Image (tube, rainbow, N blue to C red; front, side, top):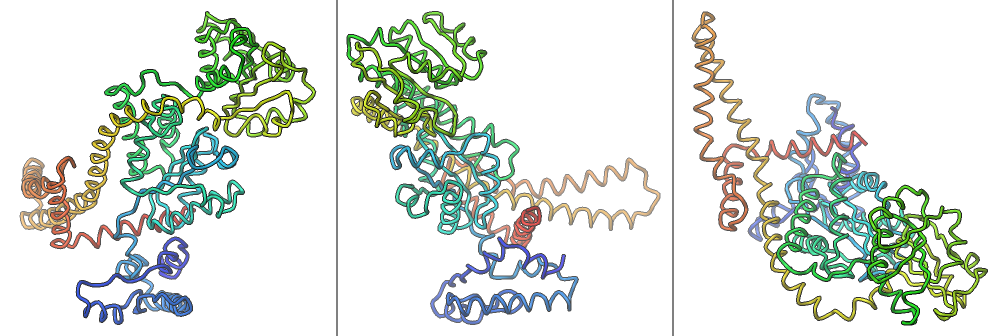
Length: 543
């Protein structure tokens, strides 16, 4: 692998070099001296902040790299990189970052444009991990939120790249996304996903559907390159937190879902005298639609028309809910069914509206018992009912953002229950951060074992050569076992001091100190750095 082709042809590493600035040393005098004299790649000085000078030095670095390749073809790109200024990003710890928009920060009109269907999550992860400063990624896209979780080499540049990617995929200008997005880093990002999984960040406190959606992120991410150890570990821990909060607190008692809140909203808007007689129609028989039917039945509704692509799901719901008459209609009968309904609930995965002004304005009025107004309650994102339908005098449209009216009454109870759950979330966040910290020692453990094994094999070969060729298998095995036993006994102490469960901050701090000491004593840091660079170069060559 020649220097010029491997390094210069690697855009992610080249970008890191372009953005690098040399860290200062401990004393001010040595800092000034080092920053002026330290050489980077092939003797090029550490890159200054001035853009013109920076570009000149980058071009000079490329020329010197090509020259080095021709004069010393045996020198690999890794050997050049190991001593270069670009290794800052391989030595520093990456950050967990969440870039998100939710029902609390952005209107449904924006969220629906940013929404990514579940089938597209693997593609989105691959594209995100193709960005220069992103190592791992996950997508959590629901009717109430669109959140991107990443492991970023640089917080600022990672956020910039992801925001630009979101703009490119949605067509929304970066400036508009920035007005409505929220950004959280490391511990705050961990706290957030744990609160999301526990149902604390939901419009309806404690609702269970979000936990299922977090589980789905893990299920879809299995085997996807880019859904790596840190991000997958974060989501798996979030599932544990969600389960624990619901088990150990009463947050789920009396909790309603988005679907039940939609039913409550519809009943609030209907005259009380007509609530039991209003004609109900549900478009879509998925999870959300099924829950709508369930809550309609609980409110005393005796009959509902369900419009769906296939009858199979509707039949399954009918068998499960014997207390309500469920009539199936195919999708091509949707407008006819809406014409005969007073309330239409929509909950499909359609990416284009099912109802627009021109579809609704010619429908007959709803019955006089409900005031002649047909209600469309749309809990889909992207929306199934266009906002233009509100221009029709005989129709009213409500979407997921309007559900706030239903849950506002329980504000005090929500706060009390949230406080109970926060104690668990704080405890679990500490454990997760400690687990992340403990991962820092894994490369050192591997390298120390490999270092000891190289010495063992080399010394064993010397011993065997001195003992001659007439050794039988039993003796050879005994000598081999002896060497392994000595090495294992020798490594036992260091390994014990490199492992901890992460529950004791003092122990964790000592473990990291031990790791740095062993890296220095045995020169392991250079090997670890080489592995990181190899991985980065390998990723770029695969793209």
